[in-house]
Length: 635
Picture 1: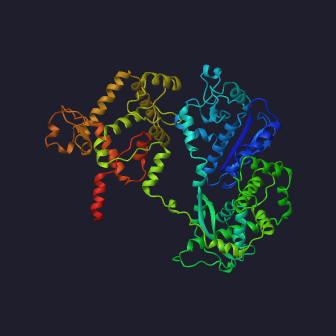
Picture 2 (picture 1 turned 180 degrees about the horizontal axis):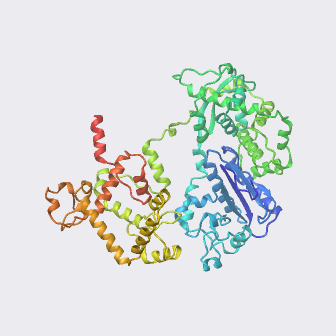
Picture 3 (picture 1 turned 90 degrees about the vertical axis):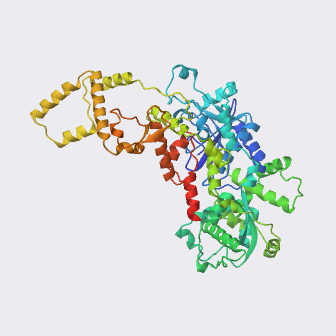
């Protein structure tokens, strides 16, 4: 993952390159400094799947040597954006490094700022253009040659070495535009305070062995939740009779989850096997939720241990007695990681265990891809850790209150607000009556006409965000000439019906002669064709005037503006004899009426009308008549 290959699904890849003279020694030294600097943040952080981890990667092909890594974030996308925050802070603290980050979607930083990107920047030419350098976002532009040649969007991307040379000499010129930086920085705003807000502390009724393990390695809760969340029938075989964590010695404790992990485990319905010994009280029991959470978490830990290789714990503990650990621990003390706590105190030991966990996840086995499974780590801790059940019971008597989980329930109004904030289209709520009075339906008609007037391409049509925007004109003559060049001057006009009929029938020689005569008639002058077509349309209008079709449209009154339309149903019985000239249809009024009728039929749900209008920045108010009728029916 740290090489040139594309990142895997639900994984973020990051690379740190030296800007200017570098080398392996410089990069390894930066890796050690980064680990010590980030320890206060990362030691207490709970990752969904994998931690943030940097490794030295030698040069390969066009990619120079660098510090690289990848992190699987699973269902918790906040882990990905936390990595982005870390990279920005690293480049701010280490001005010799420039950071690249991407995932299986490509340049997801550009996706976040898609609405404010320059027109030339496309997915095809965005590789190796986006960097964090000195704490700011930089974008490598097109070369002067490419700009002069007005090259296609698929213009060649720069190599990483070329981009690094430009950063070292022209970094101020390459700074991303303020709207682009604002869009990305908004997504990572709030850190590091946001870390504590992402936690959820809940009471759990757990076996004493799991309580002891979590005191040593709080981050193992993530692996246990994932094991339970992704369980299969084979995994549950180990939970018929619990060999590692029997239910006899259970105590109440407080477990720290992330909100994502808590939502995953609490929302799953699960009934334990009767042979397991795990039973739940009645749902009305005041501690029912703690019993249920503890039961689910115990199943996760048991599943992890059932997959363990049963390795010896001695090799796992030796990593905390070598020179690398000693140097790392001394660096933490110099940076006041222990915050003045007395060595051996409860708080000191808690911080020390978190530092050991962080060291094991991020700094050990630097040259090896072999990972210690969570099950091996749990069994190792059980064999090397002593605990007192009576002490756990005394602690359970004075547990702090658990966090409120009302954030799991989202009201429709909250969801609507979140969606508007996500699309940067949030508008403060105002009085509904004032909003209806100020709402101008002409905006709907103007926006729709502006959209229809656009010329679309194979990439789609641009949505007109303002009705004042200049319309795209269509040159009929140029289009006709281009069509003639493609099809030839003598090309015949055939539609799909003509082709179908030609396949279904065998024409005789007489039919061919008729077709030749018809072709000769088709070669008359364009003005004659237009006049003939107009006569056909007039004749059609006269025929339709004697039917009920016209009554479904709103027409213009004579001598009045189109805004003061009236329906054909309002006309008297002698309206047809009024004069031979037909009254024109009020296009705007019919358009708005049909849109409103379609919007009302959506009943507040998503639909074609609301989707296309909202994409053009037009928001229709709720149907007050329909709301009133619903309230009356309810009463």
